[in-house]
Amino acid sequence: MFKRFGTGLWVRVFLLTLSVFVCVYVAVRLNNSVAAAFLFIPVAIQIYGLFHYVENTNRKLIRFLEAVRFSDFAIGFSADNKLGESFKELNKNFNEVLDAFRQARAEKEEHLQYLNTVVQHVSVGLVAFDPEGNVELINNAACRLLGVYRLRHLSELQKNHPELMLLVQKPHSRDNTLYNGPQDQQLAVHTTIIRMRGKIIKLVSLQNIQSELQQKELEAWQNLTRVLRHEIMNSITPIASLIATMNDIVEYDLKHTQENDEAISDIKEALKTIESRSIGLINFVNGYRSFTNIPKPKPVEMPVKHLIAPVIQLMQPDIRSAGIRLDCRVDPDHLMVTADSELIEMVLINLIKNAMEAVTEREEAHIMVCAYAGTDGRIAIEVNDNGPGIIPEALEKIFIPFYTTKKTGSGIGLSLSRQIMQMHGGTLKADSVVNEGTTFTLRF
Image 1 (tube, rainbow, N blue to C red):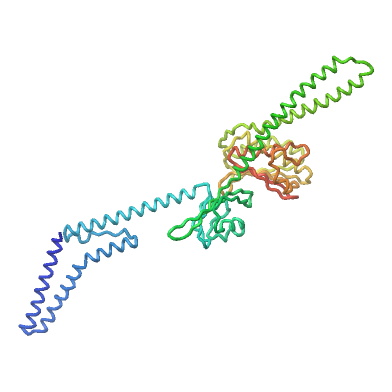
Image 2 (image 1 turned 90 degrees about the vertical axis):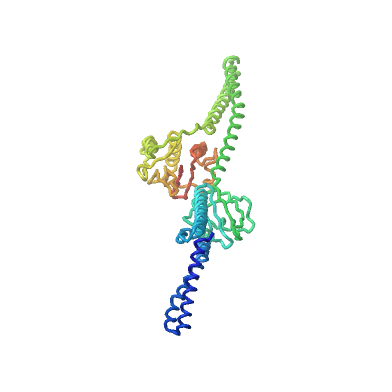
């Protein structure tokens, strides 16, 4: 198996033996120590060459093991293939093992990159940190929900999310809990503990369930409205019909005499009042039919300017006659949005009308409609007014159906607007400062 290697070894041993014999012969028989000293130099060179030749395999094995240890798979073994088939086969096996390691590492890196890409693109926020609070992992969704660019230590949450920091640092916090963020976010927080290479890591998932909660709330109100409308209509409709019959009886069947004309007049007046209120109640109930029967949106991509311009043109005469200044800004000018224009125009009209009513008593009444792309890439349209603002107690209730702060309001407009935005997969949010103004934000 080591034929060429053995041949080379025997040749080197023979030459070394011959050199030693000659050196000894010259030194002993010829008694020439100077010549023997010169002849010892090639002997020493041959000894070094023999040692280097024999140690070559060990050095090859050491290089191979060091390559595996330090993951240096770029080296190759082929320099001593000429020594024989055994060396060639050994070098081939070394190279194949290194190729296998190289491929395994490449596959591992690809798999890690794939998992990292998945983690960064899921909509659920993920944060992993060690017992000292050092953040090992945070994905884009978590950064967006927490409003941070990056997070290296949990202590960085102290400023904007102190309650969340204390919540996730609890030693045995494994159950789902609800966290109210600073921007009216409803976050479902779930923590779990994992052990990786003997190190304890706590993994926290953050999921924004605000839209789901609003959807459930909306469905509850819709169901309640359907029941109330059904029951009221079932009761009021026969009453209205009966009143019409009683009017006919009073008008045609009762005898008109001087004694009972006054009583008949009183009965007619009472019946008219009941009829008027019944019809008004029927119309009131029918007015909420739209709250439970909004058509499904048919969104198309369009310039935001084409969405806002018709609304501004429609409202401009009333705004001008009321002495209100209305400004509109779209940044950038070519901003695009995907929406159902008819439904969103209904929302904008409702918000602008509310703004007009809010600024009626302002000396320099001003309404501003602006559209822009947020830092998260979502399109937003804001309707700002410089009215008296909304008190915090009322601000929490303005999206509840039937709740209104206006004397003539029905309390359905804002609820309907939020429902339309939810059907678009977006949100409608209100921010207000008393005596400064109110901003309604549509975020698609």
